[in-house]
Length: 225
Image (cartoon, rainbow, N blue to C red; front, side, top):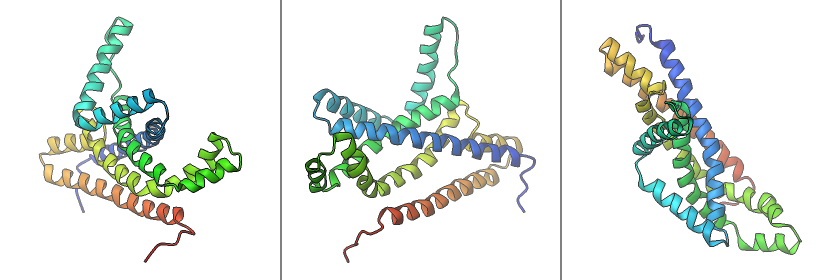
């Protein structure tokens, strides 16, 4: 039996915070990714260039550096706006940072998935008189998910692990709670091993869920042998 020396509740609370950050960033990041993909495929040049600049910049900057810039930059901006020192909430800064990072990569996944939808399906929808919003909702998006799920699944697994980076701005997540426990007990191997086991369990459960989602998305689709 592993002796947690009274830090069990703290580590559990940190694990919950980690899952909250990851799940919130996932939902918001998917929305950002869809908007970015549609902007890249838009007929308007300004939208295409804006989306291209967004994905190029975000994918070219390390996640840790981005978190620090947004956290401290946000504090400076809020202080300037309100005329007094205002510290950005670590949870909000972490979620925002991971959202825009996830969204940048998801943009490319969704763009490729949308392009994979057979053109004939879209032309058939137009021939039936469906409006553009209805074509997206009834034809493109349902089929797009089947192509996007593997890529989005990989991004989700990366996102789960990237939450550990937010501990540098003071968020009481799994990594920070584990670090405090390791420092207080002078037993880093035990507590960091526990953290590794928890992250591994999160990703393992996620893999099972992703496999089930992919099977559901591929119902009725004949796989070439």
